[in-house]
Image (cartoon, rainbow, N blue to C red):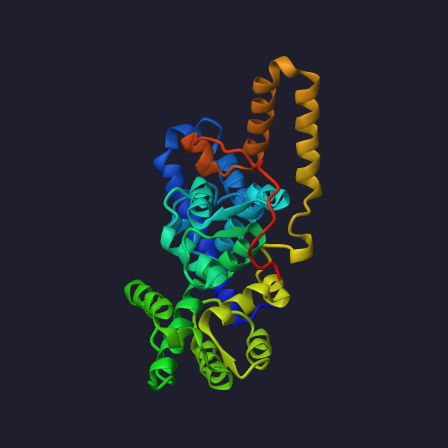
Length: 323
């Protein structure tokens, strides 16, 4: 049985999706009524269940529920897994562009924060492997509010302030803190792990948003006497238990394995080989058919431009950590 807190969250999310479905129906009434209202609602909630509902939606929508965040992370992995499989290395701006193919108004600031977890030194033009980036991005995006609050705690400890009075930060204060964490030399030296752990445990007791399990947090912070802010976030990104709790990505050893997608690619390649004169039309038709199966009602209503589900590239070796 669900706890009262989880039951309330579940009911709230259902009401949110129902409200969004009705809003979309009213905005596109003529198109929806052509194939029936009942069918529209059935397709909408099927897409929510399957995680396809976040495709091409606005950022405010994809971040509003934990399920939406998980679905978006999973969709990003499915769409661009081939980058990692090819061994390609991309800059922060390139990962930002990929994310904006799925969510046009996805904020660059969040991608920058995810890149800082990997690069630490905030070298915007440095290259990152797909696996390094996606696990760090998962922590930054899924646990956004938690990361922001932990940043406040960390800065308080560095400055010697009382860490027991933690205020959930605004976006402006977080931007200032993030900048300070990269400019101050002491920020990279770290704080006392045991004190940091106690403060985070206190935060979790009253936190209303999602946060990693306290077991994982303790395991990370008890492994050393000192810890830096980005060192802590990187440890969370690499923690298999945290990754499993979110449920959006496979373990790192299986990150580049997707038999279903591989079979689809092999089928497309075989089709092109058989019909070289019509490869453009045939592959386009197949790609559009595949995307139509996965697209949300929102996408079909707007007839948005379809994207290719896989990327192709070189086989450079990574120059970033893949531990």
